[in-house]
Each structure stands twice: as C-alpha cells, then as structure tokens.
Length: 257
Ligand code: 13P
Image (cartoon, rainbow, N blue to C red):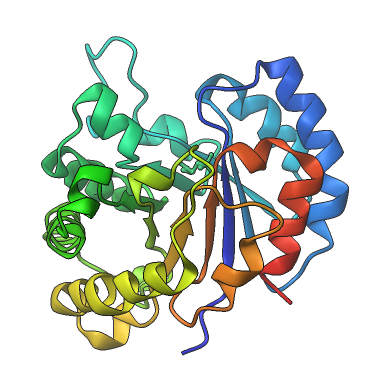
C-alpha cells in the first residue's frame, strides 16, 4: 500500500507569536520545496493566525493541538471545532499530555474526533502506553483499547471515504521528550500487530490500509530515517525537534528518501 508520508511538528506550549513568526520564516524555505511528503505545523492556538498567514501560498499545512467538541457556548478557555477550522486542516487529538495533565478520556477523544470530522478537519489521534504499562507487557492491550474506543462509531463518508483524512500517531509515552526512542522495529510491530488490526475491525481492511500511522517520541534528524524505513510507519509526529530548523528539515527530508 502506497501511503503518502506525513511529518507533523507539535510545538506544544512553546512560542509566542513573535517567536513563531521567526521560526516559521526560517523553516518555510527548507520545507516547502520537499514534495512527496505532507507537512504540517501545529503551533499553540495563540499563534495560529500569524502562522496561517505565513504559510499562505506554501504547501505546508496548519494544525491545532486540541479542540473542544461543543459548537459554542459557556466553555471558558476552550476552542470550538469551527474556530480551529477557520485556520487549520489538521488537529492533534488525545495527546498523552492532555490525557495525563487534563484528564482526557478515550470517550472525550472520541467526541473530539467526531467533531473534527464534522468540520472537515483531519485528526491526528495519539495513542500509546506508559512506561509502567510497557514494562508490564500491556502495550498491546492499552493501544488496542485506545484505538477502538477513541475511534468508535466514526463513519467515513463522501470525500472522507478513503481513510486518508484520519491519521494515527503511535507515541509510547516513555519515549516522549526523554531522548529514549522505541526501536523502529518494535514500533513497527505495534502498528502491524495492534493498530492496523484495530483499524481493520473498525473500518474494514481496505480503509485500514489507507490510514496513515505515524511514530512519535524522541524523533530526531539522526534517527528519523530508521523509523521511516519501517513498512508500517508512515511519518512522524515530532515534538522537541520540530522547534529546530535544521533537525526538522532533516526529518522531513528523511520521509522522502
Ligand atoms: P518529542 O519529540 O519531544 O519526544 O515529543 C513527541 C511528541 O509528544 C509529539 O507529539
């Protein structure tokens, strides 16, 4: 199956508008000439407007890091799907930091995925096990459950029917920001043995084969290629290295080499 690689940068809670402008203007020239890979930058909400105008006319897409599923109303501090869709094509959902620090459940993630689809946003749905779960050999159970519950009841229809507008990011939590990446073959096996079969049960094999599955967790310019060489790894969700121009450009290049 020929899935187009995708590299997304999750800036997390970094970059003021001024910082974001500076970083993006340095990054765009190196990124935009790279064809054969979908490129997504996910700044914090406050920088979406500024970054969206800098990305105008480029082939680099914009993503948000979260949304709330309600359309509008008394939800202080939240951002609706329509507000995100004003600027973005993508949205990261269910990141482990949101699950750990803000109590997001699989049910919440599911509501957010439904809301994203209803607004033609492509969700990048994050799943992954903790170190404790990894050491207790529970990776397969946890990842399978997160995939099944987070995507329960999702319907592909119309232009969404080929599965290309759903992206999964497998991010083992013990690899995030730790400098300790999973081995590429282990990550590939989790995707092959757990994530792709869960997608198959949910959507049928044909669509499951078209959904891109990224790896995330301590991806760098130096190790990216080893991940991308794995048959089930369709790109990366990059944290720390997405704030570094040379590293991030190298990761993006590695996706097409
Ligand atoms: P790092 O690349 O900093 O480990 O972060 C990964 C991540 O959480 C991306 O969403």
